[in-house]
Length: 248
Image 1 (cartoon, rainbow, N blue to C red):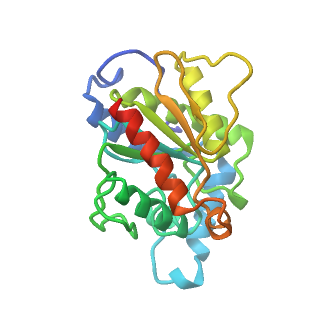
Image 2: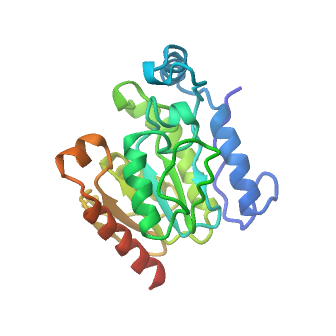
Image 3: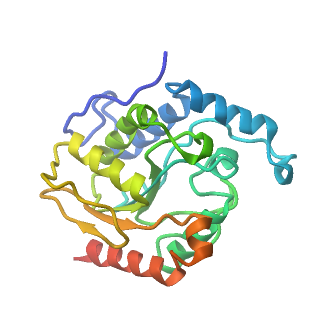
């Protein structure tokens, strides 16, 4: 049987176990790692872990769905697209062990959301402060392109995650795919956005009634950071906006 997200209910404890949010979040993370709902993604994660990149030949890959991580009482949630094949699919932690993560965690450290500027492996001492990181799709997809039905199968996990973050104030979306996924999850939780549908853009801010603010940011992919489409100063500016929203 495949683990699935639980039905949405408004309660300050987990609806299935009666557990407080931190315990419920840990239970959600465990269910994410056991999910096998998308055969194509399961096969790809396992194949990448079996073949391995030459520079990581001596490492044991995670090779399965990657859960979110960070502060279970976070007010800031970063949402990405999916784990990288030789990054999080290798290390088992979001944005850990790849160039995108190097760029992102350095900025989070400068902004005071991370205890250190690097993220190399799960047991490297990194702690997130008032911040959690997750993704729309929890398995590494071929070509970094999830299919729509794979997104739809995985999206309820994000929807459930939003409900467990009781203090959530800002959702920082890393790229258009994450922006669309966050909108879909907010809508599933009853936060409609009317027409026209908000469009993704760097530093675009969407504020819905009685919902966390949605903030857009270009994804810290190598393509974006190497070409200068996203610079350290630009990411610092977005995180400063997030900090202002948290403190307002």
